Amino acid sequence: MRAALVANCLAVFAAEVRTARRLPRTWLFGALAALFGFVAYHGALAQFHAFSGTPAPRFAVPGIGLLVLVVLLAGLVFQAFDSRARDERDRIVGTLDAMPISNAELIGGRLLAMAAVVWLALLAAVVVLQGVGHLGAGVDLPFFLFFGEPAGLLPLATLLLFDAPALLLFWGGLVMLLAALLRYGLPVLAVGLALVGLWVWVVFDTPLYLLPAVSGIAHLGLPGSDILPRLPTSADFAQRLALLVFAGGFVWLTAACSPRPDTMQRSRRAMGGGVLAVLGAAGMGLVCWQATAERAERLRWAEAHEAERDAPRADMRRVVGEVVIDPGRELAIDVDLEVQAQETLAEHASTAEPVTRAASPPQARLSAEKTTCTWNGTGSWMRSRI
Image 1: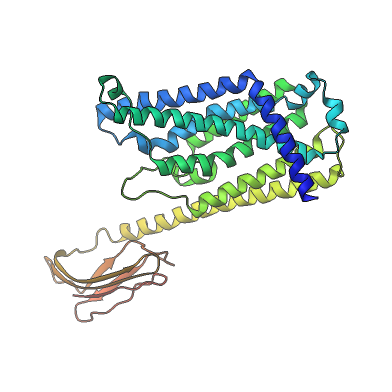
Image 2: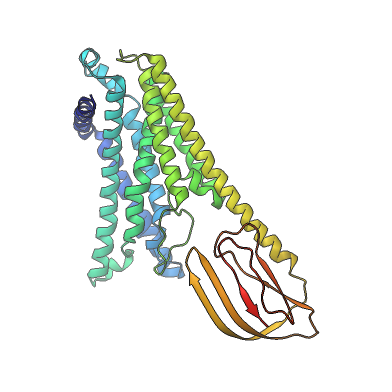
């Protein structure tokens, strides 16, 4: 049964790829994405970096990737909005309806094919950007000085292998569901493009701490670094998984709404698709809740520091001691502090940033006579002497 399902999906996949290869819109949006990415990266960003001293454009891969993906998502809308209408124009609807393939297999195979074609267009755009960057770095000619340097390999790999597939499957499934519900090409096209535009507006208008939940692009809006590369976080993995679950739900809902005869009861398809959609929404909500909780923790830290802003301060003159760092587990500090104050202090307040997750903002109060205190961070402690 599973082998037949995979074989049917692969057959539909191959047929849809051949169809997409013959459509002019496929090549048009692929060329537009490559041109747009080239102008944005090697034109605007590279020149701005050269004349203003801003960070190198190789750190702007998430932002450039978002812009290129917007162009490709518009192409995906054009690719998916009339799949049933294309079958009718090609006069193969009767043949497809008579084939022993379920609606989920047909729609799933088409979705994978459309996402793969658009992903290949993104890969081609990346190859163009990197090729020009390496050519400019390796050829000592004045003409190539106007181009930017090659982008970082880790951000590019994250964009290609981690961010783009989930986004393409999600948006392709959503457009196919709209096509099954609205049935007419022009409304599907208008609503699909409007939703893409709404998503872009939401991304640009969302606070930074919520971007991992709504953008689908890892580390969007964060500065890059050659010293400490950024890897996808647990929130990024949860959000991509939610997008994939959403895409699966869209496939089942589209299969239930399709006018084509199916091998399963439509109510069961709709119920399964609804469950997957609810699970995807729950995953997105969990990511938003986590981001909000982390921001609340940072605000508590800011309030704790603000409360101590007007407290008497001592000028630290000398620090001698030992610091033991076990990343992610423990921070052990054994230090002698030599301080100088304008007045006698009954106690000294020492605060530290949260190296590990703490139940509350840790604060250690050290008296002039007693030398040992405890930091109430989870799995961490601090010992100081004055």
